[in-house]
Image (cartoon, rainbow, N blue to C red; front, side, top):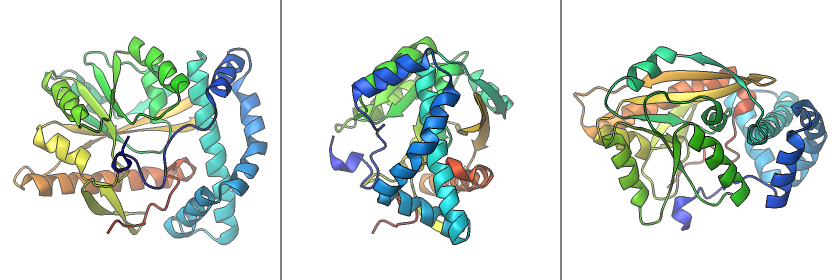
Length: 299
């Protein structure tokens, strides 16, 4: 895949070799999640030491985004890395057949669009555990399409597909020839759901500068332009971890002023998405998983 389809500072790929992934899945079939959380609590400090770039980015996130002091920022960097480890373990737990409980906030918004004939767009960000909801919560009336970047290990992709197919979910991989755009458009035309992340600027994408944690951050304009150009309703959905096997799904509707031109509408929606993301991450500060300088601007 060409570099302009990947984030220049963060690959987003799951660490580890395929045999390690398979071994973890096998162990999770017979051992409790808490055991792996306990082990992770001792591994995290070493990861912080040897992965200085991610440590520095998260330290800045808490120091400048939340105005935490030096010691508190350090502690929260540890808690963030530990929470990320729990999130990854929970995902592998899902591959191993473990079940999770979900509280849904904003169910009515989703039901209204689910019961309508038209397709709609569902956006999220790299925080919480958005992926795990696809393994447990099924769309009742519409096919669900997830835009995904290739590059993950085969074991991860295969397990995702196995769980997704049972919930009427299909993965649309980003392609260099942009054929994924046609697949996404076709899905909307068929009255289906198209889901994608809307918090990372990928090289040549157009961006909009939004206020996030009291600083200016670049958000991609593409996901919002896609929805506006196809007159598709938009939901922002976040899945936040609240405890052992417990998650909260937060659903918000994003709208724009139809009297504006399409670029202004997309910009308005991007700012609203950034505002919602800001609100939610303030409640769950350790669940932000963009491990790069989020306030670094593109030229």
